[in-house]
Image 1 (cartoon, rainbow, N blue to C red):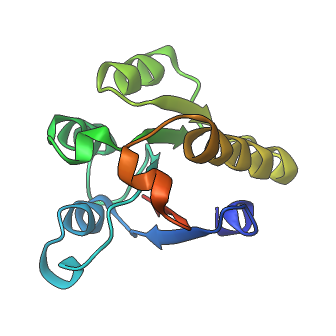
Image 2 (image 1 turned 30 degrees about the vertical axis):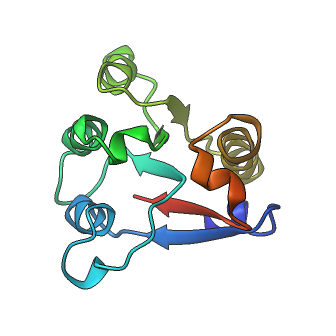
Length: 136
């Protein structure tokens, strides 16, 4: 993921959470993450350790502040049920992880390009020199 996002313009600040519990603490600015920046885009792995990714997605989208952040679900699954669950929980897109490294890099770069450069997000993101991406 870092390799895929490295070198994109405008520059991208990446924050990584190792599991769903840490992700929620970061996004809610709790504990050691009290000064954490609000991301412009979240890549959510649908197979996170410790927490149910679907529940994390639901919590994010039900939050009045966090719910405005685009969430790109990233998974190896192409199961119809997983796709349905993601969109029912208000994921902004569902990305299947390609096995081929070049295809994976292209998928991540394309999604980041769309959400950070093509789509119009919140007004405050338009004035930043760098985008903020959170990887879960």
